Image (cartoon, rainbow, N blue to C red; front, side, top):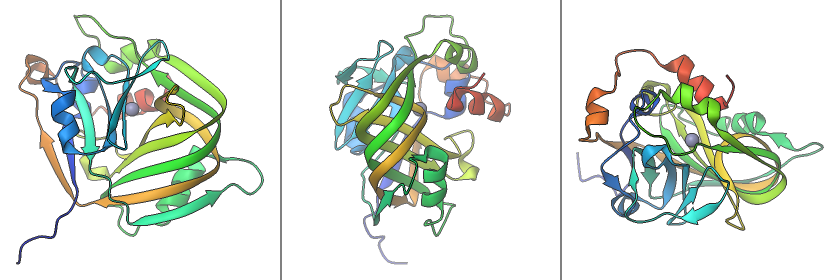
Length: 245
Ligand SMILES: [Zn+2]
């Protein structure tokens, strides 16, 4: 075996199961996280809103719907970040009606040769009927994410230009990541975004970046140490991700 070629490494901080269990405080700063890549998603300590990292800028979508540049001294409890190196670019144009997210996912899936990899995917274009959510900062004692997400704030846009920032994770990463698709959104105007619950693409450019290496950093926090990660949280995850109760 010779030296490996430079390849993008997906940096994972904490696990999705820890977040589901209520581990909402990590010990990693935005400044440290930003060194790991220019593309990704996550959340901020106390579950304060949603993180969207695009083009090297980390956005903070808050529960009042506003979008700010993330404070470098802010901490994160969960994040997935990678240097974005797309190898496949294609245009999606909805023929008659706009293409719902599930159809967009199916169209992208059809182009993936190896579904046992991670894929960072950016979809930039014109969208309609987008619903995003953010969650307000939580106080101790922390409840489970399934409980807290019932109080999520949902933001809707009938028409919006922007980018989906997505990660497709393989089934075997269950517990660490969200198996399948996980999308966050940021508008071109940088005034709208969040964790995506629904939306349809009118036309857009899809860029797909396969990732064959991942690096999981486990928090040193008490929250992480005490998070019960022994049970199967698939049902909770589905509820939290889709926004359905
Ligand atoms: Zn999310």
